[in-house]
Image 1 (cartoon, helix red, strand yellow):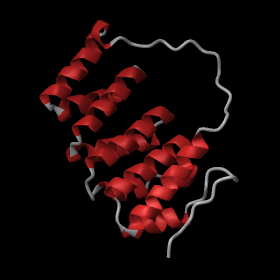
Image 2: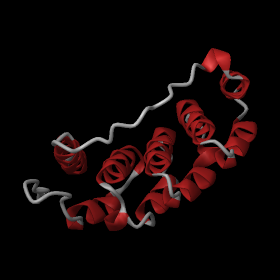
Image 3: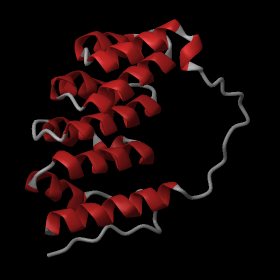
Amino acid sequence: MKVLILYALAISMLLCSCGGSTEVENTAVEVANVYNDPTLCKICDLRCAGNTAEIIKYFNAEYPQYRKAAVVAVGSMRDSMAIVPLAMLLSNNDYDIRESAAFAIGQTMHPAAEKYLLESNFDAQPDNVKAAILVALGKCGSHKSLEMVQNCKAPHSNVTLVSIS
């Protein structure tokens, strides 16, 4: 019970801190329509068929929208066979892919995922990735990850992580 309370406090504090004011660049973002893109359709079809092995091949796709779609698809499948390939994405150059990978790992709810989340160089991650890692640890972590959460640094000076004895 203490573990769940600590995770809930840590996650809510990190998520609240991520909602602060930040400047956003004025860049045009092209939103892909899955029905107009044959590759995105293929990823969706593979997800519906439960074909994790084929979706994982898109983790190295040239275009980031395909990589992210593949990670999200595997996360929605909750397949523990994807833990290792997803863990490899926790050091990806694209922070959005890192965040999605951490979330997808948590979706597996498999105890084997804890090792990879704890080895993800938590302190060096951006706040959105830290929050996703904490959520994932809340889903598949143990007392070992509780120790890490107790010792982690808050992402902002106005956030305090509380430990329950």
